[in-house]
Image 1 (cartoon, one colour):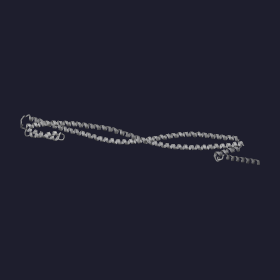
Image 2: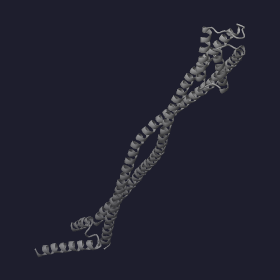
Image 3: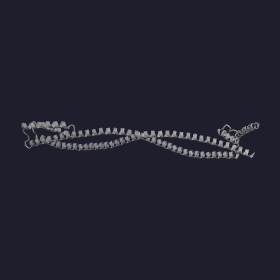
Image 4: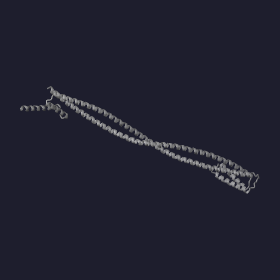
Length: 364
């Protein structure tokens, strides 16, 4: 009975010694969960009388699996790193393209705003020029209408004056045809001479506004001669008046011809002015329409750019956030991988020390 008890005590002492040796062998790893597990594995094996060679083989198998697991983690980490680098490169390319698009859009927006301002100024100037053109066209037409009206009135005045002169000429020619040195006037002849004198007085007043002064000087001696002949007809006075009337007819005809020539020139000038204004109006209208169409195009593009810039800004912001997230994930993965690698190496070191311990026991 005492012998059995002694064996139990001896085995317990041996087990305590083994555990103590193992903990000493694993100095610095004793509190490691894997180290504690491995100490239990070895101590139990040795306690139960297991083969040290088999235990060594088991430890070597564990080490090989740990090394294989480390290599697998290295491969997986390498694959993850490469994939992350590709993903980050894609995100960076997306960010750079979005930033480039944003810069281009903002440059186009600035250029279009400058063009918009220039076109708005041009539209205002063209519209002001068109308004001036419209007033000029109205003025030219008014001047042309006034010229035609004035010409018609003056031309008629000349025609009336020439007709009156010719009627007076016929009257005087009839008097001279009687051949007497002193013609006895009938009441009708006297009335006709008085009427003719009055007609010349009226014509003179009418033509004073637009007849050459040289022709107006002929009226007064004619009027005076006619006045004299209302009492008696002196052949010398008669012939003198006839001569003056003939000269007046010629002068009036020349004045009428000059009036017509001047009118033609004025009409041509005003017509040409009207044509120039109409051509200018067409040019301004085309320019204004073109500018307004371009303004619509610019405004439409600016509205479109506002949307594109908002989209580009959103892409830039989202991509920057994605890059930040991806970078954080990579950092966490790298830290996790580093921690796992350190942990795995610690486990391998623990197994190595245990194998050394077994080898030592085998050599004793």
